[in-house]
Amino acid sequence: MADKAFLALHRLGLIQPFVRYSSRLRSQILAGVKYNTDLITNQLTYIDMVTDSLMHSVLGRTLLCGKGAAEASFITLTDTFRERFGYKHVFPISQGRLAEWVLANARKRRAAIVPNNLLFVTTRCHQELVGSRLAEIPVADAYDLQSDFPFKGNLDTEKLQQVIAEHGAERIPYIYVEACVNASGGHPVSMANLREVHRIARQSGIPVIIDGCRILENAWLIRTREPGYSGRSLRQIVREFCSHSDGCTMSATKDFLVDTGGFVAANDDDLRYELQDALMVVGDGLSVRAKALMNRAVVRGFRRDRWVRRRLEKAEYLWTRLKERGVPVVHPPGGHAVFIDAAELCEQLGQQNHPEKAFLVRLYLDSGILAGENMITPAQKERGIRMIRLALPMRRYSFSQMGYVARHVGDVWGKLDRVRGLRKVHEPPCRSGSFLAEYELT
Image (cartoon, rainbow, N blue to C red; front, side, top):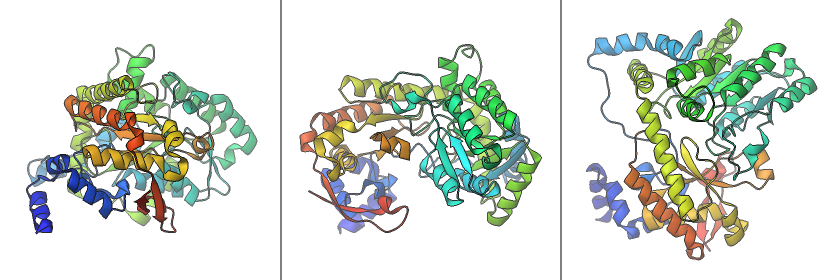
């Protein structure tokens, strides 16, 4: 009977509010997934802050009217992207991760070195799977979670020159620059820094590639933090930002209101043909309908500056409320999420008790809020950096819901003695094993 009632609630779209009010149900869900909150689906939460991607969301009806309109929109997709971002050659693709795979395989080199500014875990993985080694060279402030430096996404240009001199340009297939860097706390790359990186790269004939999945947040933070850009539109800033690069990979599901799609783009003809060859193997994975929807999403995204502004306002509001409650948030406020410095968790609960996961279990049990451990890089791990991420999907939650999140995160943080540790009982022997691991309460 319980299973039938549960399915009936799911069909009626009532699961999320039901999860909010039923701590008993949340307890059963946690036991069912062996206390691994990575396995709790979006539909079993009240507020899902694991990711800012809309890929796992159910969006409203946005399909263009009529078959002819959809086909016309599909035809103009590459022109739309080219006009907004400025790249000569554009390939729509089903996912940002597939775009990363295409780029990594297209530019595969023996003993390659890829300088970068703290890439996301999937981006790193694609480079490593083709035999490349990553050279993490962010500015020093990127490793200081309490520094108020406004552009922690910047690359250290002196170290970049040293890497090029040490390894040689022929071993560097590209320099990879992530916009609004997730690993450092959602912080932007400045226009001045990218311009200088591109200047150094051009001297050695090395392409600069942008990971542009959060490029609108990056543009907004340039607009508010970098002198000379306060009167510029997001479209102008994005176009100039991309002009200091030679190509990009992008998931469109973070900054644009679409649940599928992305791009890989280039200016150079040789790189274009390399990308084309790689795409011939896997295909773009997009239907005409998906391309039409993505075209509409990109057009609307650049016309709705207020969407980006409201998202960052909500992130700053949540950041401020958490700080007032004594939660050690990462400084300064970022773009797509609020990040918590988890060092205190490790001290109080002990690293052997999986403190971040234990905190997330307690948060979900008390409130129905689902958050996640932030993906960090090897260099961050060496420095003992650990974070929890509260991601804000585009146009998803209200200020009142951010108040709810701040209240419950603050309550759990203020009573860490109530957080029970976890013991890992099983982890599959694969790269993604940690996402499928099973735990029990200590």
